[in-house]
Image (cartoon, rainbow, N blue to C red; front, side, top):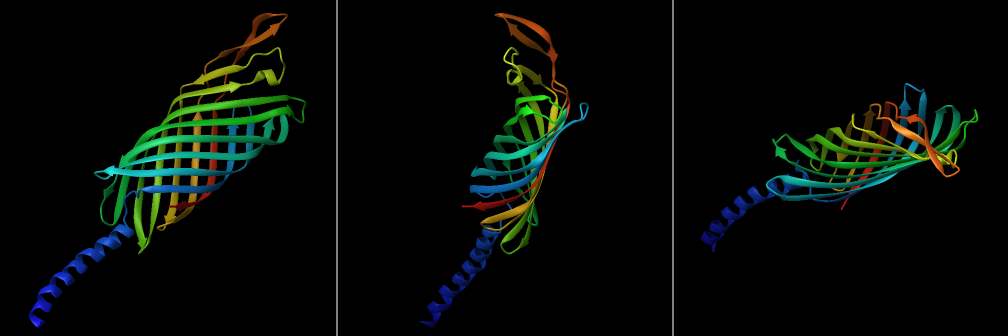
Length: 272
């Protein structure tokens, strides 16, 4: 009947007017989205010890996995794991190329989204762990004997992600982060040089990291550049031990010099 058609048409039109914009806003929302994300990276890696003229440089490739959850109230949780592998060229006491070099990171962060309509800000804080393994075993061009080295960083990441909408189903996400070093530990396997030498472990308590990224994001894909920088100051002293004829004695001390690491790369990610 004509009268009934008018009665139902008005609420229907009103619901469409409310629901359609809401659905579009959800598709192009600026808040942190729940889901799982896998990524692939390529990067240029450079490690330096300026005081000793030591440098390790090369290219790496890697994979990462992130899980995002939204427990409610605009809060979010971000769990992340990364692995990077490559081969680096050594310059210092001579040269030595093609040295295996890899690291992994585990991070847990939480934060809150603040949607301002045309943009959003998502500050976060968390806890991170980084483990790096560098294999310099062998002999350099000048006859110096190398060894393996392990580096462990425990740190607090503090940062913010800024998002803006670019088009109907895309956005630009820029993240800036500072990493506060809680504890660093360097293990130099001097037994690789000589079986009479003991391995040396140095603790580092002073350092920081800076990282950033700019990603173009659609519903499923994201792509863009990223950069990561670490600076750690000189470590404490540790004794160098030697064992001869069953007797162990101190033959000197060792420290980890001030060093910096710079990595610049590209990342392609897929969300599901």
